Length: 258
Ligand code: FPP
Image 1: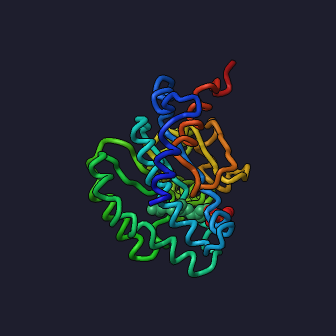
Image 2 (image 1 turned 90 degrees about the vertical axis):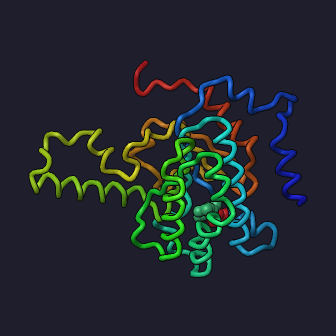
Image 3 (image 1 turned 180 degrees about the vertical axis):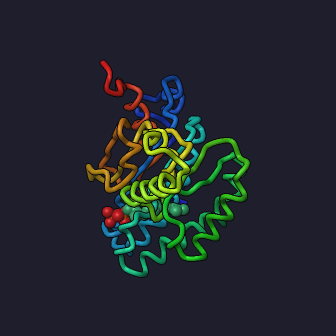
């Protein structure tokens, strides 16, 4: 309850009294925001809690930021939830993370449907446990026809893995005569990535102080704006999110031109 009240107060007003949401609404809204949700483990450790407690609190932040993105009219929110490298973590932590989609399904599906959110996933589904895949499938089926925010979970996702998979499939299609080698351009590459059909992220946020990309959407981030904060993911609030958007609104995006 106390945590809930803290979350509510933190999100209510900007320091200068102006509602941050209405302020940000006046500027250009990024179509696609991608987030590297980092710092769950450190957040938990600082409180003498097991690392998984950080992931649990992180799930609450997922809910809060999804609501905020929806309110702002963002089209796509991509969340880096489990990387291809995260399998190296202790077994109990991996098991816990793999159970989160199922739990999120029980707690949040109704609200997501009500909000017209479409849930998607990018990453290699084949190596996920059955219960995780089943939760994702249920999310996808229940929200398939929704036309609002696309909530895109990157699960068992690695960008190098994604690029290699795309290259292999392009080679197969060239060798089988389905496609001409000279027709392979950026647009073709985009079609073979997990993110096919989605615009590249306009803004990438990484929490918890690390200034790196960690194998996340390397192809898609070519011209994205980057925003880093020392705030850990479990402590990240809608106000932090709106501040990131506000900062984005003051950037001058030239895409290599002058
Ligand atoms: C990185 O923090 C975070 C993760 C590897 C997992 C993120 C997952 C969630 C926030 C929940 C996602 C929710 C659903 C429904 C899929 P870390 O553990 O690496 O933190 P540390 O760097 O402090 O150790």
